[in-house]
Image 1 (tube, rainbow, N blue to C red):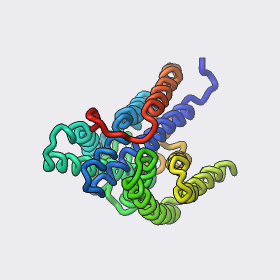
Image 2 (cartoon, rainbow, N blue to C red; image 1 turned 120 degrees about the vertical axis):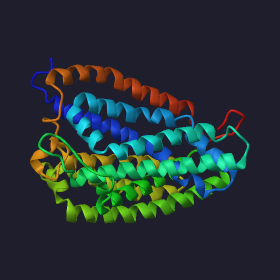
Image 3 (cartoon, helix red, strand yellow; image 1 turned 120 degrees about the horizontal axis):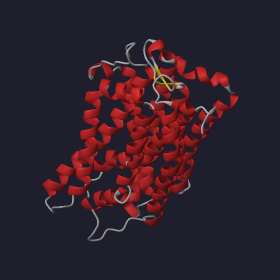
Image 4 (cartoon, one colour; image 1 turned 90 degrees about the horizontal axis):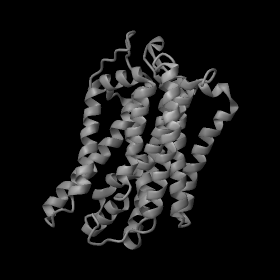
Length: 341
């Protein structure tokens, strides 16, 4: 049915789309968590939690779907990465669990100590998730020590080299900015004014870190730019990314928070598209180039990719429709009531 079609490339694009969807949607959840402890007022913290409360678990569906798609389409890459990054992924998993528990348990008691404990857990988990994801991306950019048999052996500390840590910190700043901007669209009054300040501060931090990361990439990983010579149209991606970032403070200063949020979404999406362009056709670049896992040597059979594509064409519209409906239902400003977190 799909003879003559490069299903490997199609699946690379689909998986990139799913992970971009996760970063854009759950990114502001993580950003809100990162900023959660910047206010000591209980009602303001409840407003922040309820700004993401109706959508955070649905946003994580994109991560689960992306991981499942990676397993089905590129099982060798899935096995190598998850075995080589075992300890970081376990830490990431526990952070995701604690973040969920913190959101649900935080308002189960009126005790200040109880709420403060879960507030701290929520914030630390959010920062840790963003940091670890950024560190993982940083290590994939510079390449990991994959052996000829697709085996990857690393330690936690070997992954914490300067460049991946810089990418991790940049990711935390990016999500903090994204979360602050999103929260301004859901809040009013004094809290909204605070969030606008936090958005500007985190935006400045992100831009500085983004410039440093770009310089580091040019110096240490120039191979990330080799694919841009294949088509002049690829240069539109960094151009759109830069314009989106520039547009964020412009829209914030005009009081157009939703437009600023859309620009933030575009910035995150284009940054990940740049990452995908840079590593293509690799999925997991290796320090020894011939050992890299590509969309061809790490994939399932052509028949499996074809069957899974049919399932994806049915399932992905359902995920997109579900996400759209939830956001439409819970649009507008947050109003606290007895059922709120």
